[in-house]
Image 1 (cartoon, rainbow, N blue to C red):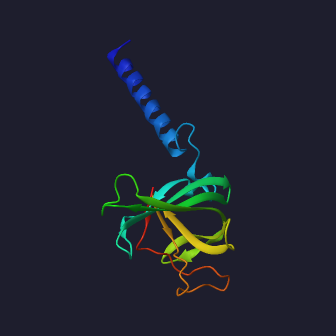
Image 2: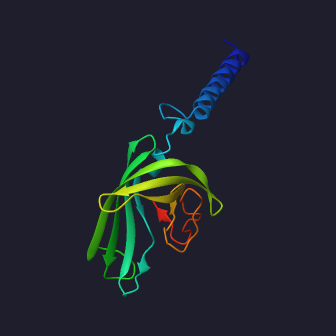
Image 3: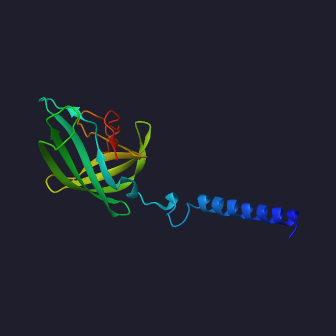
Length: 168
């Protein structure tokens, strides 16, 4: 084999390797499911924590959502309020209160300049209520459900609480 033939063979092999890599990258690579086919509930799966906050009675607290997929547009969750004896919410909590719920994604909309999922949340104690959730990467925003905020004609809140994002 001449040096020219060897060089052509090396260039063809390098070009083929680049093309295979590019085609795998374009389709999501390997066996990963393409993001476009993700179901609405997929983005919520995980443990989400709020920032550490000082409560009105002096302790520090952190809210936590533990969310799991229950169906294409359904999520099971547990919301826990964790209390700490320090201002950084580190170490073992000194107390907690939890409630479990089921969340159904009813549709999408826009609130607080973000794309949101309009949801109905059902808890064991109490009647179902409508809330907004929005996920952007590892940040989740939730409507606070306060009675003073506005609601749309279908009963969904009209804004998210952007001051308290949850991180995954």
